[in-house]
Amino acid sequence: MKKFLKITAAIVILLLLCYFGFFKYRQIQANKISIPVSTDALFKINVDELYKTIAVSYLKHPGQYSGADKRGIKERLTDLNTGLKIPANIYIYTLKGRAKNTFFSCFEIADSLAFNRFILKKLALIKKEAHFFQSADSTFCLLFNNRTVSLAFTLKKEPVKNILEEIQAQKNMVKISDSKFEQMASFSDHLSFQNEETLSKVNFTDGKIDFNSELMNRWIEPAAEPKHRILNPQSTVSMWLNGKFKPALSKKNAAGSLSLLSKDSFFRFYKDYVDFEWTNTITQVDTIVGYEYNDNFEQVEKKILQDRKIPSITINLNADDKAVNTYLKSLGALDQSTGKISSAMIPLYQFYFKGSNGTVQLSTVQSAKPDLKRASSDDFFYFKVDFKKLIKQTSIPLIADKLGTFSQLEIKAKSIEKDKIKLESELLFLNEDSNALIQLLNLFKNGFNSSLNFNSNVDIPVNK
Image (tube, rainbow, N blue to C red; front, side):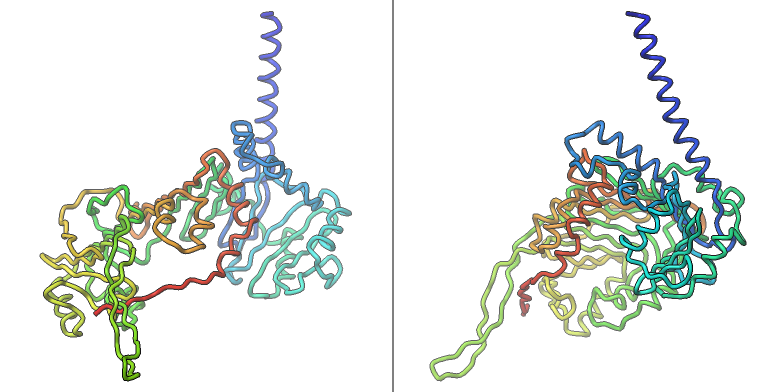
């Protein structure tokens, strides 16, 4: 019995070594490819890591997957019978001097006959010249020989044949290991992207998408020691920002609108802090103005009080409260006795104004009181939305139908060096046992955009 167990263990270990050795070999081979010297942005899809992650998810939760979902990424691509050899990593790049939305890539051909059938029948491409094909709208182009195919996708419909020829001939190319994108070859992340200013990574695990990015910051000057108001962790939506907007951005976004929440008004009064919180749903009494005929058949105005369910929203910002008060009074938009703001300034919901000690509060709750207490944080920005509560508190079909797949979105941002920030975010799904990429693909396959066309009847009250 012991001998049998030893033999079994040795076989299992050998199989594991072969398994990981095979994937390691594929990674080494995939990272030997070359990219154009003029590459200014590189996108990497780690096919093998996606395959392994989904395979492990299936082994852990087989009941979560339909027959189609049980197949890994490689199997799905193979089922298309493209005739292409699918590498461990797929690299897509943009080039200097070309439109930012023109993308190039290159693949080895494993079966030339299958590849020819694929481009003619599945892709329905049109032959323009020998071995050069285009889509009917000229956005997709490919050039191939017996061994490789270089392809391009261009929304600008710019000429790309000469670039494809250079890629095909490996002209003006450099190995990734010798380029400025060298570090990307070692990334095990499912998706990664790098250009001159940004480095981003995305990973799909069971019930969660993780995204993080390091990027140049041209918009905000984060506070040296960020602080924020302690928000309710049970809020439907919450956000805070502790930093100053750079002058170029505030000038660029000046819109000249009279609305208090317009970009013009915001940048005029905002100093260095703002937070937003939607906690729950409250009942607000609105005055609906209508018209009816009296006994003399004259049309007269009639006011009706109506209860309406609205979000309990509170916005706090560091601002010159006296200047805001004066601004509202000069426009006749503020009821000094109640703090009520005219609907011309903030439409849709009734907001109330409070200001003191350099702090302004706008809230749909009249009894809300400004809270000046602050807590320290490493992050200068935070955003969270609870989709489960959002669906309960709204009646928009798109939200209920499609965003119901998700549970929560959380985004954080911190300053890591001068003019550079790090974003960290995670998107949680209600189903915690199925891989997030499979759930996302199913969501789009079932028609994510189908719910965009809907009729929404919204009664906007007139507040007097």
